[in-house]
Image 1: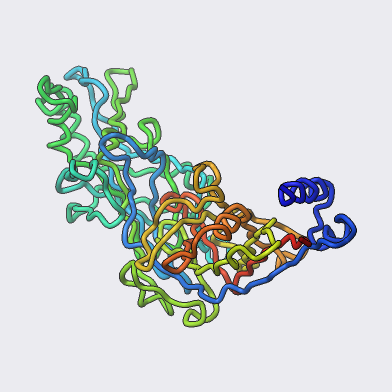
Image 2: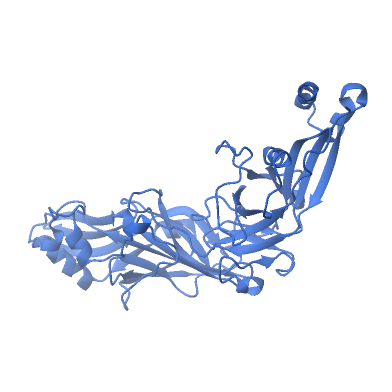
Amino acid sequence: MRLFILFGVFFAFYSCNNNLSTIGQDMINNTNHIELQTIQIEEVSTIKIDSFITSTGIYYNNDINKLFMGKFEDEYSGTTQAIPCFQIAPVYQPNINAAAVLDSVTFNFTYAGEMWGDTLTDLRIQEFQLFQLNSLPELDYDESGYFYNTAPVNIQSTPLSTVVFYPKTANIKNAYFKLSHEFGEELFDKMKYRDPIFQKSAENPIPFINFLNYFKGLAIVPAESNNCMMAIRASSDSLYMQFHYHEGNVQSSISLPLSQPEYMYNRIVTEPTGPFTSLQEQQDLVSFEEAGDIALAQGLSGYMVKLTLPAPPLNRPYTTIIKAELSIKSKTFVDNIINNPQQVFVYQTNKINEVKGFLLNNPNNSNTSIIGKYTQYDANRDNDRYVFDMTGYFQYLSVTPPLQEKNEILLSIPYWTSSFDRLIIDELPLLKIYYAIYKE
């Protein structure tokens, strides 16, 4: 009973005194105090996820609202290439008079407002080629129809079109692929003369399956010389092929928009470089020291940081953990060509580096995920840290039997399957555990 009374007294003081180093001076008769234990995390390494989901699945379990295209290379993450693969189809059966005359055909994409790469110090023309697919991607119903970043993209040998632009927002907004008149004429004539590919199939749940079997889809492939990655919107009004035509003096257009999201995915492949070249399988790791005193977590490329946390002393007499905090410093750059995340997520893992569920402060409450928050302490950015409140987690460990295996976790940027942001750790993390020490 006395222990619970002490907790009440302590938290009453804690609510009005946030300086943990002085709380002990305010406690009853000054016979109780706060003890701080600072532990440097020595086991820090970088791992690389083998593959990750980049599609919605046949049940649309993933909300994929953007795709990625581009190529980026640097000394930390190596070379990453992103190729979006998707399908287009009519929304309705075209009704175009035979007298209509085709003017031009374009393929339009819409910038989603996110770009990563060396566009500040090395502004370079970006080149992309639009290819037609050779085959419709095959859905694996046993795996809920998911495609992974390593799924191949089977394209034809000759591109349909090429677009070039400087990677500035205004330029990207005005960029589009212009297709040949010969290519457009063939499809346009099929629309005018009611070709079977534009007829719905009554027995198939996919309305225009005949069209998809004829026109398998598209892929946008970056040139080898590109040096940035960008996101494009994945919606029917943002990704579409448009036919411009006229009848007499009347100008018209008809679109074949993005269709069948379950077939849409990104192929994203990263070739590690430097100290991370050895990361060929997911169970591989490169230690902080082997990498030249850095560890890397980056979206789309699969890099994550692995830490081994110490176990707190079990049931120390007259001692209670009242705060546990993990602090991580990230490398900063004058020209930040790849953004740092505002938060860092924490996952459970094992000796073969599988990504398990989120690490929780309360194992019985899934809403208590531990998240590292970017914290600025003063005007000097060198002092900025990611701070993780792990109080509940270490309180739980202190009153449960010791773990049979190492206490290993993975650090990742948020939404690591849909962002190229990165975290470079250049100092060993610190774990601070505050104990309330009281007299019997």
